[in-house]
Image (cartoon, rainbow, N blue to C red; front, side):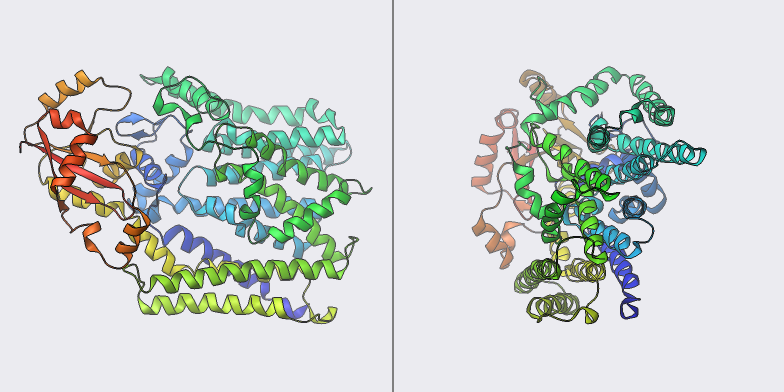
Length: 607
């Protein structure tokens, strides 16, 4: 085993690199990240009960994520890296919680499998997406991981002696602390997986006594007091009753069932769900560990029925993985990130199967282990080839990376691809010459981390250029000059870049959808300053032909730095799209376009 003694250190270093590149080598990417950054900036000076977007309270989620990101922006500046600085803490907290949970689940002696399981968790595709994205889900995932670690630590205690009671106190206190963090990330919906896992586990194990323990109920005062304090602060706001209804009715019931609501808060109409969508997408969520997960599910079929101390662990893992996923499948809305807490259960299942293979306690023979390793190597090989191909293709477009960056990135992806190909084609080796399954998982985690940190630098750079909303704001401001800006029916992304990048008090909104009547808007237009510039969003996205033209250098699609002069066709299309502005005496003077088709018309009064 001494051959692999340095491997965990390399894997952990590569994981740190993976987090750093994903968090700090990117700008704000749509959807959602610009909005989340604007919300964090709104509470950077003072931690209000709810953040603001366009001067209105944003009552979708509790504010802890925004408070922490706002505090970071206040200290480090209003940059994407500063806004995401707390995300690294969330990732580390979730990683530490998984180490603790796996140690309890597998036992202190299974050190190699414990570390492998934690690395596997951090590199799972859906978990990584959640942890690097500027949103509330990273803190939610960390809170759920902490809650589950405390929960299983309490459930795993046997006996009623003093030491056992003390261990239960510690476990349930940690569980309720995690639930508090999860609530303040994303409302009561964050408790879906922990609550269903707890109820499912005690029902399966017939341990109803857990519901009557003082150790379970007294620590619940922590989330109860914190939630009550925050709810009272929200209620004290001028629109507090409306905000609470949005928080606890529209944003909870409205995501599970269609409920009557204004268009702005009709959450059931967005991201519509379809039966079985989460289960169909599950193999993608679990990449690159999909083959390991399939083997773990097969092992779980035997693990939950076999007598012995591992049976409760298998059952707990299944209760974390599946009940929440089933409930989400019946919700009115669906997004992959909602399933991220369920991935903890699948990681636990994989870790149990890895430990069984490593210790030789499962019925599976060496052939099954080789197939799992080769299947995972094949998936990683395909991913590396995809990264190589996309990076090479971009080098022949306007989104090309500097050649030194391209060479480093492509060489990294090529090395990962070659190593995976070698594993796929390698003949059967004798046991002494091979690492254990847990050690091989660490190698896979190292390779995957290098591929999605250094290997994707070209892709990240291209995305940064395509997603540059700061440039859009600069071009709009350059066209407006010192004149006041009015944002016409802005969506959340438009409000976000205005709030992030335009000078304060240089803009305001006009004709908020669902609030103002046409007569009121016409009256406001007549009262607008004569030199006002109105910014309206143009409908539509780029076609495939437009994307190809842009990639081959057609600068007309995005215009010069100050914005494109309006053509006759543009004026006609804008007048048809926004008749109230045309009737109010406004004419399109220029157009600002971001790659991909997010386009804005800039209107001025007169012809």
